Length: 113
Image 1 (cartoon, rainbow, N blue to C red):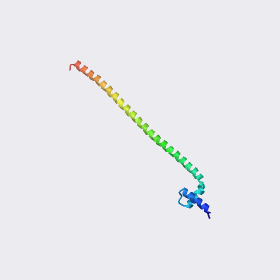
Image 2: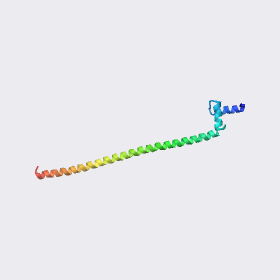
Image 3: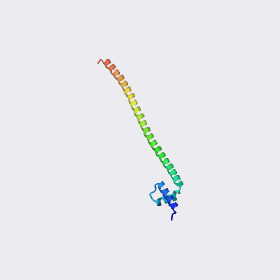
Image 4: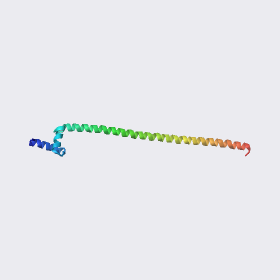
């Protein structure tokens, strides 16, 4: 049987921690101690664990974003290089065509056309 002081202590703990039943309050008092010191340590460990998980998730997300940006940058560089190479090739072909056109005109002039 509980003394009135013990019952008050359990009820105070119950209301302070928003616990639904007196039996649950007793279980938690046994598990974490009446002053909640073990509960505080448990919560600190839990927060530390959650923080580590959040850091790992953020690192993974940043890694994925970086990989996507790197992929986009590589594609952009490839596209720019392709366009530049195409422009150079067009210029070279235009120059070659002009040379060939000049040669054909000279040939036609020599043939008297």
